[in-house]
Amino acid sequence: MPAKLFHFAGEPVATAREIDLDATLDHDALRNLIAAHFAIVDPNGSIGFQSEDFIFTNVSEIIASDAPITITIDGKPVKEIPGPNGLPIVGNFFEIYPDHLGNHQRLFEQYGPIFKTTSMGRTTYHTNDPELSAVIFSESDFFTKKINGSHPLHAIKNTEAGVFLGDTDTPEWRTAHKFLPPAFGPKAVRHYAPVMQQTVEHAFKVFDAFDEQGEAWNVYQYMLKLGSQAVGKLVLGIDFQHFSSINAPPHELILLIAESLELNKKVTARGDWYSKLPFGDPKRLKDIRGRVFAIVDESIKNASRGGVEDLPLQDAALKAHNMIDYAIRATDNKGEKLPKTSLIQALLVATGAGFTTTSSLLSWLIYSLVTYPGLQDRLLQELVDNDIDADTQITADLTDRLTFMDKFIKETQRRHNPSYQPGRTAKVDMILPGGYKLPQESVVIGALHHLHNNPNVWDNPTRFNPDRWDTEEVRNRHKAAYIPFAAGPRMCIGFNFALQEVKVFLPKLVYRYRFTKETEGPVEYDPMFQLIRPNNLYVRAERRVKWPPKSDSFVPTASL
Ligand code: HEM
Figure 1: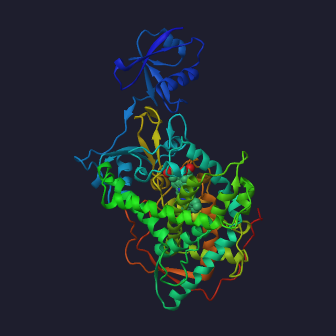
Figure 2: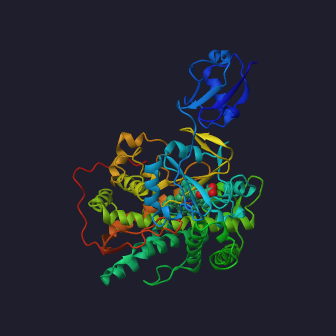
């Protein structure tokens, strides 16, 4: 079997590796062999072979050549991932903050689909490219969710939680991932629709009171109360009493989780040395974790009082009153249950992941209602045309018919993604599509906001246009061009829950109120918070007294 020396174009000949070639190999098989030896992520089509003065088109030419063979990717040498030079110690910190969305956009425009920054000693890579995003999120020989020192979640890493805050390759993740998804499947969340509806109807008292006083309210503050009220009831079985009066404060648990996210972003942004301080923010972060754990433990004890019937996972998911009820009943085929510590940690994480995100999405939905002319009226018309009124019980079957609302939600999640900055870690030194060299242990962040607003992927991305979702271009998009809940095995497990919740809340809110914007000037987000939310948005919600008639041209969508 002939042995040949191969090295990358752009790398010295001294780096060449000897590889045995079987004369029966065809060109594609050779590409796959070279891809396996050099950890080239995408062997298909992009790998080429050449010598100083010759481009090889078949394997026999390569075997006949005496010189080392140069490997090209897309006909070009491999390259380092670009990025801005930093200052001593702080690196690129001041080039990124405070407006990390705007600054990252500028860096994508300057450096292309993937760039590298170092902030306070922590290096991360960012991509706005669908192909690269699909690669990083796929959990493969190349990437996994491993929360190392460079990962944005490092300061709150918690292996016991299994989900969200832990690495993929752990027994805790596998256990949590066996028990939690059935409770978040589409069928399981359907039976939570009535509680979701009661939650939003209960909040009307407060929005009505604001209207009677002619007052505007801060959207994020009240969507935080609303989103967390639903998650509190349906995940932890706790009534947070967020709408008992206009000024009812958020429950202690909510304040603690929100504070811990804020502290985490701050502690992570400032680097390793800061996160190790035994006082100040890092200490507060540890103290918060202890208190939060105790509150959830108490809720589990309450739910267990009086005894519960064990059920197989799927049955438990359909019958449980909430996720705690599910988690203490659900039994796998070996008769095992989710261990108590994992249960507390996993539910806590699901609570945090659930309310911070849904409250941001709800806020951006209201932002879209009051910012983009005419859309509120179109939503209302769709409700009227589908015979929805104040007394309608909203079910998943009904929301399936509200196709404009679906497009409106998708477009809001595209244009105004709350974004978790999900990061994945390189398992090996590799060559990414495009010929980029990525070292092992590098953390690549799928920059969801920038992916969803990438002009190479989306036509006129800054234009808010729900109707784009009807176009062939958007229907045929790359599978990773729109991934508000990330992708792959570590994507959001609560997305059915989240979408159902907003699809129950939005019709109820739009039918009852006409929303108008009261904020002067631009809407701002808090750069030190883990998520993007419109902090200073104020609206008036006026009770409707008139509704439009059904449209003449309305053709009902067949029930699914
Ligand atoms: C608009 C709402 C939501 C958005 C945009 C969202 C987004 C995301 C994203 C991007 C991830 C991946 C994080 C990463 O890779 O680091 C994630 C994971 C997760 N989400 Fe959501 N989420 C939402 C709602 C929810 C809800 C309502 C729940 C539960 C009640 C939930 C529970 C989780 C959990 C447990 C994970 C971790 C999964 C794992 O580690 O395998 N999310 N979410």
